[in-house]
Length: 334
Image (tube, rainbow, N blue to C red):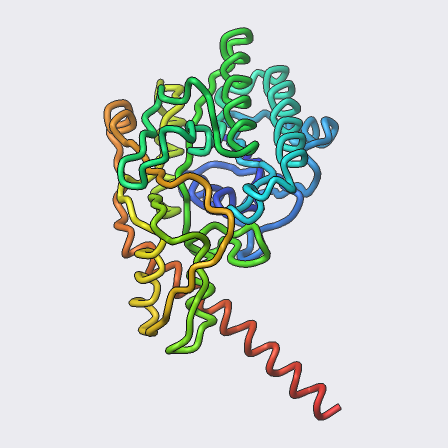
């Protein structure tokens, strides 16, 4: 039985990846600051600690580990990454995690290491046209990411590749494009746009309105979580190092995405456009390289993924509303 270590296993993608690896017969060790928020971890062993601590990272290798999947990072949605208020933490925390992990996996001679990069590494100047963004692998230079998060991810890609060149580490790198699905953060400021819009629609009264940051014409592509973990695993088992895009090429505007959730909910709502961080005008996954190297393309249509995600978030919203109502009634009768 192969042993896999998943760092960031308390997060959205990490927790789903743990379950996927278990289904493939792995013994899985999860590590993070916290357990998954919305599900019970399926990891054989889950170690809670700070990956910025070299001592904690070293403790994760008390038994031999065959594969490491590094998904831990200081991250969030546009409201967290694009205000500029969290730049120092984003860069410091994520780089320190990667340095610690690379030093230890090199010492332990781990067979394979996966690093989760981001489409945020691509230059802002190639993403000004909402309908024709250029996110082909190899287009990242001259470098000009639109956030410090993107700069950190680009630096860390180079960090992993330098360890591959100098120490023979077998590295796999993927650039994620807006991964979404159930059991992800949907409020609090770190949520991504599909979760934020689903929450807003779920909370709105029929005939009401929801807020959209910017004019809503900015475009993105969104990949459902099940496709994501399958692609990660396929990359890890290949002889290709990457970097490679893992995402969907199904481009959609933010306004259209909101209307998809409205159709799913059956509600008639008005879109109110307000000022807010929006990132680049357009971003889409170019999947030619992954199709060539891994013979893989997404299999779950956007509409299907949005339906499943909305239903899960609506359940969470309704459950919280019920708890709040029950607490209010208890306070009235106390």
